[in-house]
Image (cartoon, rainbow, N blue to C red; front, side):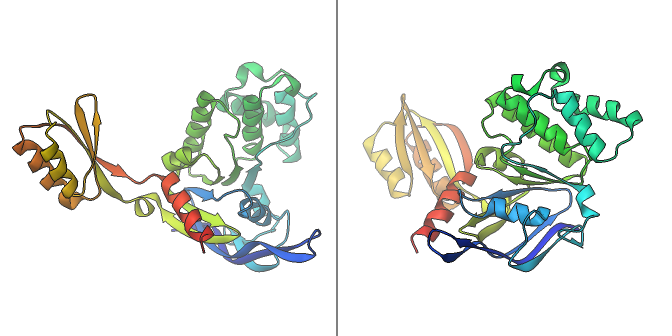
Length: 310
């Protein structure tokens, strides 16, 4: 697959003026992001995510290592027309209207006057601000400011979009709309590099993810590979005999009683048939049998905790 981003040994050190010691914000990072995918860039606060993004954007320079965007070195002027960045808290002049903000950035990109109005109207519609485009930003909510930030990031029709916490502080409906917008960008063939703490949303939309901590890459891969199925939940009725429950537990099942039913968490596929046979032999009724995949949140927490214990 063709690379959108390729990183080899990227490292960033800075001087901690309080301690006088050098600190590695990003430590020998190797990573590849492919064209047309939504890539989740995850990690706790202070992991080095924003520092990495700023190096890729050419806003700060790496201490060592190399990175390329669409095959060209980071900082290449020509590449900048193909990329865009949405920071966690975008800032605009609050006395401007949403329409004026987009028109201003369209001018910076040299979009001709004959195209600007059409472009601005289309972007306001894309982010759901058609009715609010003529309001000043001081009258915008947090969600509306985030939307105008996304519209501004799309003004140059970028091939690669960096998004840092795009749904931070948004209500549930706004988060769903932003999530759907990101999916539409992928459907248009664009690449999205997404840094977020909203792990459920990342799990829903990302093709691949990476987990960073203390500047080091801990895991990277497709979600199907990182989150394999294994556990199975079995819900059954008419099973109350303690002896039957004991047999299920001997087979490795974790049993809970809920409103006249039992819910069995079975750790692996191999013993599911055994538990089903135990329930049926006791004249119990199987109501559901559902494979349970490990969640991204569980993977994230276990990965970070494992490193912190060392």
